[in-house]
Length: 433
Image (cartoon, rainbow, N blue to C red):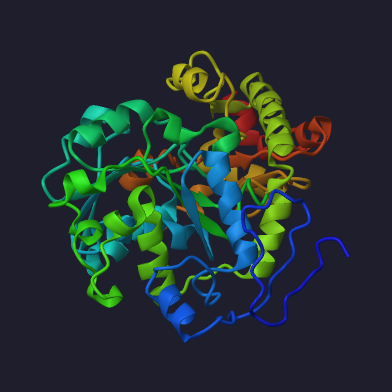
């Protein structure tokens, strides 16, 4: 039956580059070798193929190929979650120590990874004062291993100037790593503007249905690791764990992604299950259509909120007076993300009342679902950050983050309308108006 083939035993290896819609699920742990020499060649990275599903799986390989094609990269590595992808992306360039220079507008858990977890592993996270290129460049030194940014900040909604950040990074001999989760390759292909590595939480828009965790790292294949051998010895010096293999020599443009797979996926095992890969592939089949509807619905919701006297502010890059409007036109073809924030009159208490009154829009911390979702970042996703860190990340006490789904627009706006009415029905708020 279509899409239901399951390989119970190892040995059969389909072509992972297939474009067929009918992708079978190869739910198996290990794969048979032709001989002892064949097994040795696979484990020495001298031959391509499958050996153990912790390292690679045929179904997952199809997913990786399609994500790489969407982003225009030379290869991808799919892992268990978006956070695992970020962790691997950072340590793959900085496992010998050093620092990552980042914009301040980050998802809360990413900020925790860079600000608290990685420093305990000898990798510093440096946060610039803003997402401007000069603020980033001031923090780069001889120990910097990468510049990092979210192409569209979550939840700040800022759009980073990828081309300018790439120039700063490359001028200082380091790659630009971007999290392209919110934009997706449908709105933005960051490699076309100089980014070197792209990271995704596949859980979000690419999966698209709020059912399946997954993450991916995509390699552009363009960063010249051999030209910066002193800064990145792990790609240019023999790896004792692989009998002296040199990644830049063995894999060429794919050195980054193959080292991530061979060193980190193999030994740390943040594995994406084949069934999750199958589900994510189904989501990718509709992502272009869904993003189109997401974007159109979000524009109408943002316009409704901006014209409502009960709303204090709306942070939406699609408005001509937004500081990111020009960047939206440059990078997103004039579109804006379906993720944006706003605050209603009455501050945090009114915002919480609005949040608690929603009926159709679901209160949870995911984004990119086919369903419309709402979040109060100060009490959830960014709760572990200080008030100043929240402010720099684009989070105010009253901020409500909306991830607008693909429901009928009239139903979405009706729910927002009734929640606004309840939130602003307090006598004190009516008197203030």
